[in-house]
Amino acid sequence: MKLRNFQSKIHAIDPDAEFKEVDACAVRCSSCTRWVQMRALYDVRSFTVHRQSGRCQSSQRTNLVSNTTGIYLFDVSKMSLLT
Image (cartoon, rainbow, N blue to C red; front, side):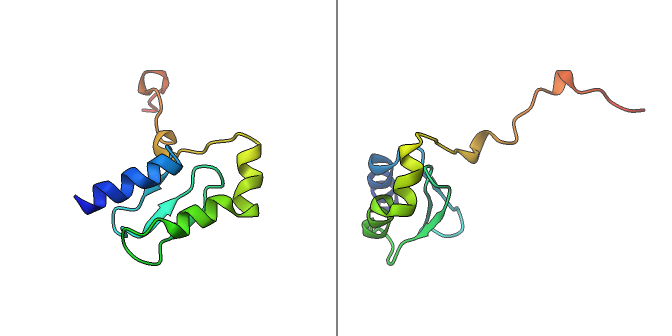
């Protein structure tokens, strides 16, 4: 329940943010594609500070969103098999 609330708070700040399955304190910013390590579990302060930082702000101004969930999707029907 706490983890879901934490993720909801992060998604309120960055709807396309991603989370590591093995490290609940790691959040990937969709604007600059950097992994942000939270100081404590369920504390969103580090992510909020990151999103307001100059490094992330420059990426936000370009309106680019990077979401890695679709990178490995491809159309199998268009692939030819070598035999």
